Amino acid sequence: MATRHFLTLLDLGPDELRYLIQRAISIKNGLKTHGPTYTPFANRTLAMIFEKSSTRTRVSFETAMAQFGGHALFLSPRDTQLGRGEPIGDTARVLSEMVDAVMIRTFSHEGLETYAAASTVPVINALTDDYHPCQLLADVMTWTELRGSVKGRTAVWIGDGNNMCHSWINAARQFDFQLRICCPEGYEPRQDILAAAGDRVAIVRDPQQAVAEADLVTTDVWASMGQEEEQARREADFAGFQVSEAMLDRAKDDVLFLHCLPAHRGEEISTTLLDDPRAVVWQEAGNRLHAQKALIEFLLLGRVEG
Ligand code: CP
Ligand code: NVA
Image 1 (cartoon, rainbow, N blue to C red):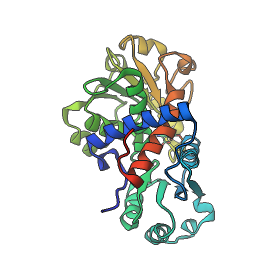
Image 2: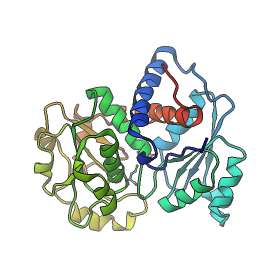
Image 3: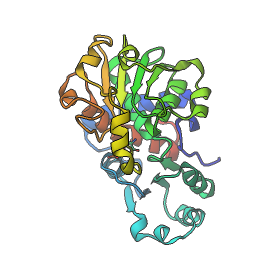
Image 4: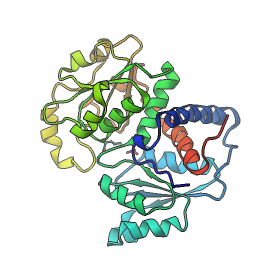
């Protein structure tokens, strides 16, 4: 059977993604009830290549492997041959001989695709400049846990048309919900990604109008990793796009607020928003652990019932 990779949400079918969400919830409940006694990854190894910083992604993948009885290896370009110019295809072939799966956080999505094309073990996108699909597994899991099926509901993305926004667009396609994207002129998501989603996804310029009657509101930093030098310009361009409690008041009474974190309080969110009960970002962050367990299990072992 051909090796399955998870480079974007489009690498799995809608039915497989819905399975993963339910499986993640089931794994989470099992952990709460029995503790880390389910160890399907005994003697399995996940290589984790990080070319950008991380707290949640590193800790959740490493903990997922440990709790499932396996092992995770943290690899940084600073102290591997990747940082000294060994071709990524060669690295992919070498790691394929030794480990069971590879997780990569890097800049170029094309670089990730080059790696995956040469890998005979599953490759997982742990964030590129263009996508962050693992975060969306945790986000849809959180939304589903708290509100049931997301099909036909309305989510609103406020802010930059960045990697997270692109993955929200793909999530709208795969999980069949409506998505309103509210970004300043010049910060739209990529046109091809937007166009492929059809009329499920709409651009709405006015934040107050965008959040009206929404089921879920989400945002992200205005300057992503690698855009640090644009911080000042972006702060000016995103004025008026801060998500606040008052903005959530315009959405449905049971609206949820998500943020992949890390957050910049006082920039893309008001200083107190994460303390509002509608913000469920800690549960969302914790769900990275459970969603990624379900993902790795699926890539290594296929569907597991229960
Ligand atoms: N949300 C997320 O991916 O966080 P980290 O950058 O801390 O991994
Ligand atoms: N858009 C952010 C997400 C961080 C998890 C970034 O790429 O830095």
